[in-house]
Image (cartoon, rainbow, N blue to C red):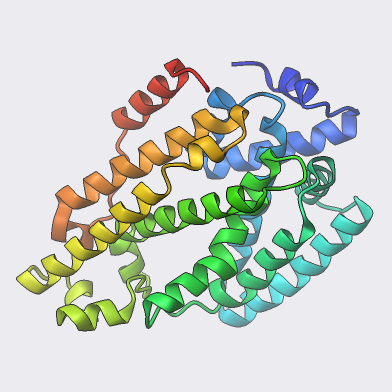
Length: 301
């Protein structure tokens, strides 16, 4: 793995202050999300790594504000953050090194700013005010409003000028699969926190109550609901398989690793069945290492 300093050089990032900003952003990602950071460092082409790390740091910053405190505190925090982001994007400067690095990445890679604006607007509405989904349409609106722009402010930096329509659509399919798998894997923790991420219309279709899920009850109706949700996630994951080919060649190993990790986690949820209502389903330790090792050995086409 190349050193961080040589990675910055490969990306064309010059100047002590600029390189320090990207270093702060990368360290923020390392502290918060070690697996994605390691995937980037080990598998992505070095010229892309600093830009993508800054994008991931920015995405995480917005997520943290959108999920912290009371609804009023989240709304206030996001209004203040939106002003700071807009100023950073316009001027290229900020008091926050993460925002300075991200503003530079957006300019350097030519990411259309509407993705950033859409993400911030979605954070203030779809995420900060999240109370669950009544219908599948509500879930799809959540993806369009928040999750898809949130992914694109990060992954969109791989493309000079931002993703074209086919690439953007591919990452939309990817985020659908990722969100479905994540909701299933984190079902127990979300229920404990008062969040129900399965559309309520699906519960009604299967004759399942929220209380049954919160209490981790076993039964034919609950099992049928979970099987249905896993099948929907599997279908979404299959539909997202082409994201590897749509990615920049320098990010294809990362795309393959992410889809393989999702498939592994979904299989673990399927094996867990109703136990997923009582305990979140993680990746484990050995499987991610095997997936990373396999990705490093696989040629990029």
